[in-house]
Image 1 (cartoon, helix red, strand yellow):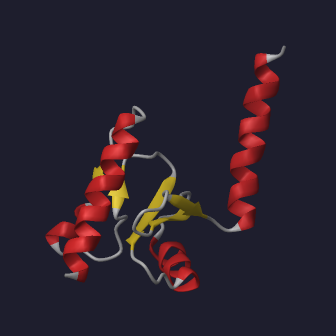
Image 2 (spheres, rainbow, N blue to C red; image 1 turned 90 degrees about the vertical axis):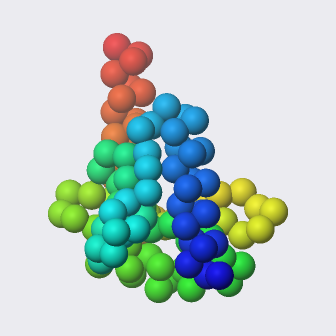
Length: 110
């Protein structure tokens, strides 16, 4: 049942990201490969997807960090029943994204 819920969570998340305009789909782990992102299609982001009521957040983030390819930012996308999707990242990775956003925003004002 847990695997089924995980699969549904991955499909749900990839559908939501697709609705935002990103070409996302479940990763290759459905073929049995280990160490791949649960959902692929966000360039530069390694997604660890967790659809559970009791999340071991540090364990999930450690898994994302361990599995992320060099140059990608590990992130945990998680959701409980009747709740919004959340994204958890290490602070230094989030700051990197924020600084890139700031530079892009400043470039719009020039």
